[in-house]
Amino acid sequence: MKNRSLAFWLFLTPVILGLGIVVVIPFIYGFIYSFTNWNGLTATEFLGFQNYINLFQEDEFMQSIWFTIKFAVVTVILLNVFGMALALIVTRNIKSNNLLRTVFFMPNLIGGLILGFIWQFIFISVFGDIANLTGIEGLNGWLSTTNTGFWGLVILTAWQMAGYIMIIYIAYLENIPKDLIEAAKIDGASSFQRFKNITFPLVAPAFTISMFLTLSMSFKIYDQNLSLTNGGPFNSTQMVSMEIVRTAFSDNQMAYAQAKAVIFFLIVAVVALTQVYYNKKREVEM
Amino acid sequence: MKKNHEKRNLFSIEILGLLLGLLWIAPFYLMVVNAFKTKRDIFGGVLGFPSELAFDNFVQAFVDLAFLKSLFNSVLVTGCSIAIIILFSSMAGYALARNKSKLSGFIFFIFVAAMLIPFQSVMIPLVSIFGQADMLNAGGLIFMYLGFGCSLSIFLYHGAMTGVSKSMDEAAIIDGANRFQLFWYIIFPLLKPISVTVGILNTIWIWNDYLLPSLVLSEANATIPLKMFYFFGQYTKQWHLALAGLTIAILPVIIGYFFAQKQIINGVSEGAVK
Image (cartoon, rainbow over all chains, first blue to last red):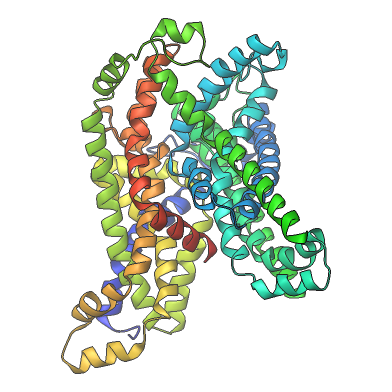
């Protein structure tokens, strides 16, 4: 097909319209409107950087950013540790490996909103009952403090998505040539040495993928946040995504919310690009 | 001696795996067991078995969720979105892969780069634009899913096209087929494996999506997650009903997973690794 061929453009028209109207145009509009007093319908005044200056001075927004960053860091570490551990278990020659893959992956198929409600029950009622039975005070009152809300979100997310990361690691683990491991065994390498010198380097590309995925997933989380803690207590567990939604659709400050959304985009884009850049570099060096 | 040691090792890994597996399904188990309890039963403790099976919970949840209607709405939105994503993305992936010009490469780059833009960064203008065009309805929602879903799908189809030889095109053209016939009868069937992957990946997120439908759909047209949100708000502190509702809401997914778990896990694996 040539650039001037009609078929080429006809084949592309639906997706160009789709991406254009749904993503590209709103993205550009949003960027422009973030410098105005746009109310969702019209903008009457150009404000320059006023919205951006305001948002950096707003405690609630800055708090949501720090909360999200903290959440993302902890979740990314846990997800990759758990994902790798689960993958190492189910790629061994055990009888239940197919069953376990099915079980570990299951939470991924169910929406974060529904899972958040289920875990609300676990953290409040089940934890409460276990506390009564065992006398462990720390299990009482989960989700009612910032700290337990934070760990509640981390546990929910780690439980939900570890199976997904497991699948990625499995794909790489199963590609490692068996004879390489056998040869190392014969040469007397311990199982830790085999992991460190063979498995780990060969699985390194999976890190690029899963770090990138988990970071962007945990930054963009909304459903779980809404259904598990609803941002409470006192908006202290509100993540950036929820902050933007509330500023826009509860407080009706559209232009201001859009400025937050632009900052959010910049953070996500910078993180993602840095991640890809460093991982590619490391892979090449190895 | 060495063999025995290895066997024992494998056995302890199996036990560890099974324990983790139990931990993983514990939330679902607790949900189902307590969904069968009466309100008083739950008050007495959530860890034991129900003293009697309260099927009424499910009846009331089924009615209050307007379950058949919500299910229909979910199937309609997800089904239509998947159909147009598969059709239009495969066409685009084909066209972009068969045109090696700079312009074609640039268009492909734009689609891939768009994946960096998080939904939250476009949602406010998006809702405003569609609101002004009077398109905040199921049709508008399906079109939005095309916009959000096509990037990854085109990327996957574009990759899969490297496995489809160009001699196919030439033979069909010589036989007198036009581009559309060629695509529809020759290329599209060859892309079937990747179409399954694209379908699975998009179904998982569209079926479960809450935020976008919550901004676009009215309660009358609510999909399952959206309806679940309203339902849950109605029954806070009434866990017997809330849990029965949650159990019903995830049932379609569990049934689907039961029949297609191999394809689903393979599809996700393929989509993530590429």
